[in-house]
Length: 302
Length: 157
Image (cartoon, rainbow over all chains, first blue to last red; front, side, top):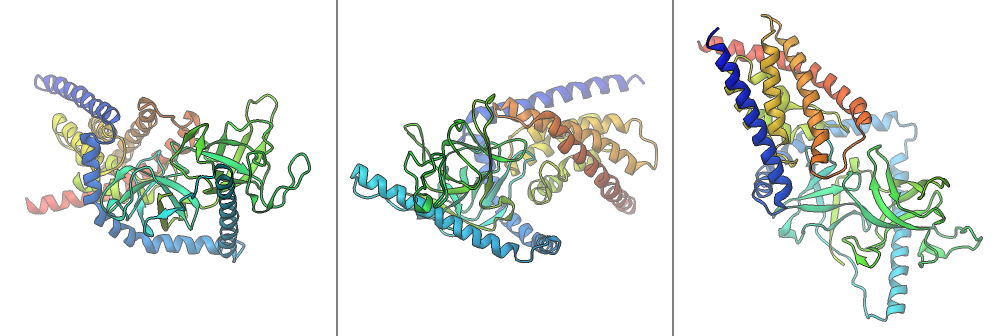
């Protein structure tokens, strides 16, 4: 009995000390910045674990493939995937047209010679998701050796935005923050699809390529904690309607952002204006489902 | 413990859906510290968590704190354990430890100056199913694993 009490006291003291040590580590990690020692250790460990992650991904591939097959059987439409691919192709084409038109207009108005086109890194395979209950990130198998750097846009196809690289880029891997992560944000513009009529009854130009006047508003793309992708801070009189395309604006006010203009994010699923609210409530259906990602490309220059 | 940390950072993300997934570290700590002295158990939980923080991509210190809390909970609940109730003990201890771990994950982004999920939503669709899943896993998998380890130890002796 006599020895149990000191043991309990030392146990409590150890518990408090270790809790304080953990919180100290957490504080250092949050404050040190991306190049701090704890971040560097994690980066090194990520590189070391790359083969293990690759193997596990390979080992679990039959399960994910089986799961996809089951989903396909349950799905009433047998050609769903085919249609999704066609829709993606169409939407990409429309957004590409929007981007080209925007580019062309800028060239004409500013007389600035040439607007460089996108420069892509090599085709990258998604190795596996990154741990963390409240994050939505994946690791891809390209890194600084392939010209990939931090804070670069990641796309599927030519220009369907799926996320951006974080500061965790090793020579052979890069971590990608997906658009469905709650900490992801991007400046976007809502543009009408080809041939639609705006509120004044005038038909917009083909390809959805908007000038400032044709745009159905600008805002900040974010995923809410309720789980839907939305555009915040769009004015109530912006005129966004269901079916509009959502593309990156490439800027916020006068500041250039990390995304080039014209990357397709998705289409407006619902746009609600209520007088009691200051801004529209816009829900976006993403072009690419982050869960289905297999191969992506990083835009390394534009 | 090292294996649990490795699986937590490599396998667990593949099996996580939304806010729910196997917390292999917590199950590993709760099972591994059974029968250890208080200080040994807490240190094992702490260093298991530090290893998970190192190998994983999350905020450093959270898994360490989670590991310490899981060890403390395992010690506390272990004092009331009856002989032959390994599976039930593990399920109870893991359930409580998961609540602590999930609440820690909820608070961590706020402490780091980021936006956290809506509390009620997270508790209902995150913590509750997470607790159930991991308690069931601990009962079936953890219990068997411990029996296997115990049998092997007896053979060695």
